[in-house]
Length: 440
Image 1 (tube, helix red, strand yellow):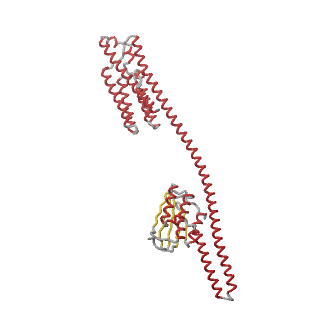
Image 2 (cartoon, helix red, strand yellow):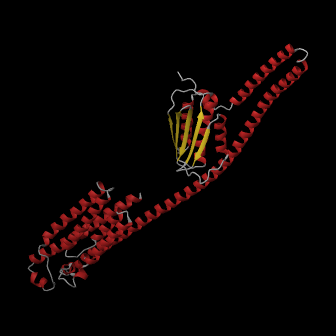
Image 3 (tube, helix red, strand yellow):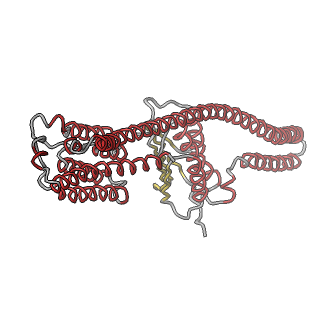
């Protein structure tokens, strides 16, 4: 609505200026024709200092120039509204045409530069360019003031032509001339006021949006803090629950197994001298109990295996983990697996999977990384696993929970691991592999 008002006022200013310009040149041409028809030229010449050479021709020239001004207005609005460089060209053309119109009228009306003012304010967005164009228009307005120029040059005045008529006609002519000039200035002031109001409204809207964004950001930070705290509590509770469950599983299994073994050994001690055959039978039963107990313990430990590895092969499970991580973070993760179709044992797969998972987590949480590259390749009878990120790294590599966890997992497979903090952070693990069969 505001833009519509500004556009309408621009059109009205253009119309008022056309009427003013046309009024001046037609008044001079009409009065000149009347003076010549009444044979009063001698008397009129005695009262003035200068005359237009071709008054009627000036009417046609002014109409033509104003048509060019309107054409520049239409082209600027319809074709070049979003092309700043071409807008500047059309505005400079406005200056030239306006100056030509004012010159043809012998500087009897220069209010047309207010029309150029409105176009500059409407189209020029940058402060530097806008101020430059406004200064140009202001200088043009001041330099085309007839009272100022008449000090140095002989110029004919519209007032001399008004004075030809009697007092009653003069009153209407001078009133119309002054009304058009004043109306032009009033419209320009209204236009500037609306433009200022529009910009003020835009600034207030931006400030409101900024304040809303600031409050949202504060709420988000608070929610992130609460979420982090909740995550810590949940992680701790999960660890405690899992630790207790495993402790119960292992306690029950070990307790049962070790109790059976202990009782059996006592029986062997009691019968070994009396009946070696019976002692041997006891030992066989003890061996069976020990094997079964070991299987139960392995079964309990194997429950720690990631669910993805239960359903997928190692490479696919790693890709799924990467996809899941990328879906909830902005981190880019690239996985280059140069080992094809090889099947590892469960503990090897679990270790590789967990080391990658822990390294990616540490890169995000501690390294603030945005990029992680994971490479897995065969090196003689080992798997060489390299995880490198572009994070902040660390001046001194300390053995924290994450690195201890990685070292323990690799150590259980008799592998080695080293950490480097150069242009980010790197985990380089070498794992001896009991190379298994290929997938079908």
